[in-house]
Amino acid sequence: MKALLAEYATFHDPRLAPEGKAMLDVLSRSFSRCGYEVVTPDGSDFLGEIRRLAPECDVGLVIAPDHLLFSYTSVLERLTHNVGCGSMNAAICADKVQCGRILARHGIPVPGAPSPGKQVIKPVAGCGSVNVRLSDEKPGPGETAQEFIDGENLSVSLVGSRVVGDACSYYTGKPPLLLAVNRQDVRVGPSGEFHYRGGETPLDHPRHGEVVGTAVRALQVLGCQGYVGIDIVLADRPYVVDVNPRVTTSVIGIAACMEEEIADILVQASKGGGPESVHMRRRARFDSHGAVEFL
Image (cartoon, rainbow, N blue to C red; front, side, top):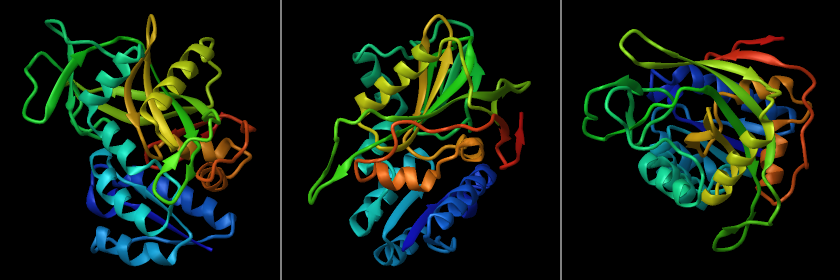
């Protein structure tokens, strides 16, 4: 069996390359342990390599900044079995403004409009903490501003299941699989810029049910499948600040702590199956370059 793992940032985005390589390494090892021969684009022509390699593979997965996921995943899913989020759902999540409006219409807490003073400015189609900042300036072209919420920076890692038919994918009705609640190490620099440094997982939080329930509702409203990371700021309520319809950096710590293989979970979920829960044998702190320290 062959698995195509198409990770974009390693060759094409120096700012995100360390995180991209760390995620790719974790997934490559897991798919190898599950019996797959792993193939990856060589960096010269990312889209061309997907077109060339995907037909030879049994499964495939794209790892790329959110605004690029639709175009690359839409090609991959026509050529092999996609074990990640569907391209249309990825496109919805990539537009941070539209995504927030959809969640708000369904009663899911999201940051509101900014008030005078401290506000968060972020790209409408961004990835991670790149170009996210606290500022009292007006957002520039391609940016949006939202309310700053002072609270705990958390994320919830979920895997949505689906069944792929001849013309579409559809839900089996199975609830998303919770992998872990993670604490995010997010720091604000002297000029207000946000920096993501990694985190801790799994987190046994006293408001676990509230946080996970909000994340599950967000995933279901948006129709995401595969690995999904829901970023939450926990204050008076859990506010969903971002939905990442892809593998996120948290997989570094989760895979190190989890008894199950992440590759097996992704493949099973893409066919409507998989476990009801996972088993975490320890806790870990991880950074954005792939280092893991067990706690």
